[in-house]
Image (cartoon, rainbow, N blue to C red; front, top):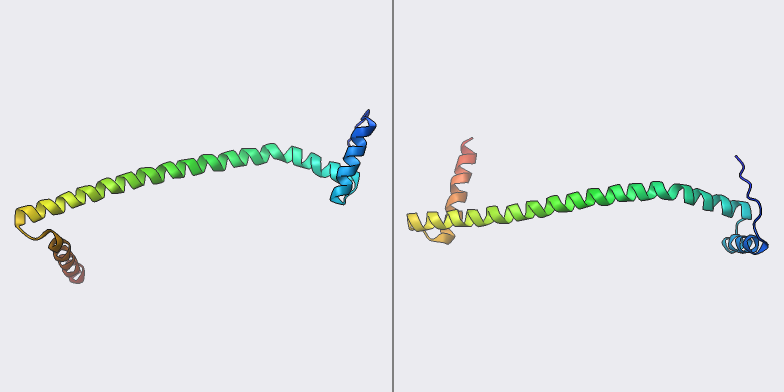
Length: 109
């Protein structure tokens, strides 16, 4: 398909020719590439916006998950302290005891 542009001043045409020469392409190739770039730019921007929105959602989900894990870790430590306090077992021994029972349970399956 052809597109014609009329009534450009000579300085504009000379500038376009110089830009094309600097790129090592013809005026037609330069203008064709420029028009394609202009036509594609909104599509690229839309896709970029979608990706940024998705990344924001992922970052928010990761932040929520991180906060939740911190809370669960804190609760787990409190449970271990409660077990240590009520059973009079040394706090640092509880994970070893639990690992032992878990191993026994898994081997029993």
